[in-house]
Length: 411
Image (cartoon, rainbow, N blue to C red; front, side, top):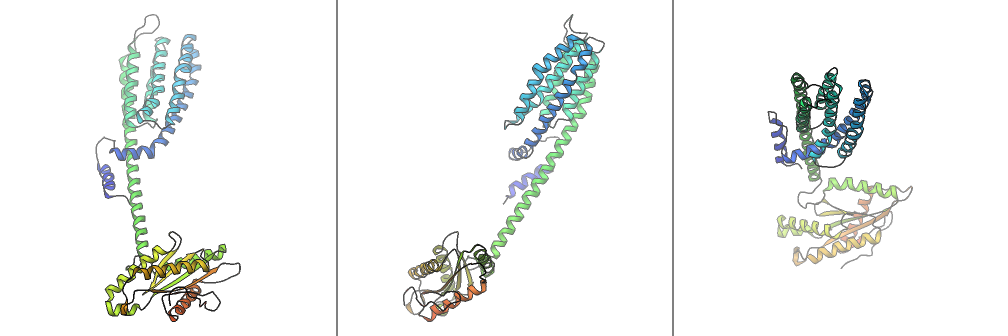
């Protein structure tokens, strides 16, 4: 079950106001695990599409002039394309977050530098087109790419620094005049709203994550509580083993399995000998102690993880023995009888506490019909025979046959 501290931590994050997006380290790790892979795939797809669009602009560079076209082709194919391929590979691998940030923005910043460089090389007549293209690229990478907000901030700062530097660099004979500062103001003014929108989108995504986590944890708690209550409703309050309610349903399921798969099913009905005298002489509190001890012995005497032990009512217990034939059912019954006798619990009239048991087993066969009630009735009949034969013994009764009077145990 989710502990209260985790839910308190989530609710605290939900109630936080302001512009800070980061969670506590544990929640941040869960958020990245839930969103990171899908986000990185989206970034990789954006980079590929962006590169394809920019490669189409090579034709536009050809119209400007052969020098610009050659520089554009050389830099795009020699720098931007390899950077994009490397970025996509890195984004699809499990790596630290800062690596994803560098991978996402390195190709885009390289493209910004390339466009500004082409603008300066093309001369003053059409340089503004390249400047506007670079500005639109910066705006697009900030708004459209699903990178974390902190990476968008870093990417925008570096892109604007590159934009400014290449706007002012002078290279007489190669570059046209410096780009007017008005364009820088325009690009910054254009990009800041995009950055704010990216912040709002990530904030909404993080809030959705927190709400989903809250609902998931509460649902897990509810299911765990329901499972716990269901188990408690199936247990006997005194002995801690399964109760009659659970026994009835488990026995029906076991019968169905035996019939459907032609498998053996054994049943033991166990009853404490002279238990009324124990209650009358030693009191009900001691009688309850005896019942608890017998239940523990039963659980340790049957096959762990295979057999089911339940309190049938009063001082009677039932063991369901899947895949147990006559011999196996008698062996388990004798093991139970001997273990309880060896425990040496005091009974009435100076005797030690003992049990009697009735056993039966049946193998499911095609066309053979039997019910849980019939098997219980046969085991109960065998138990009655054990009681009448002197108690402290196990007697087996074949289904649809006479009682097998060969008893195992002391007379």
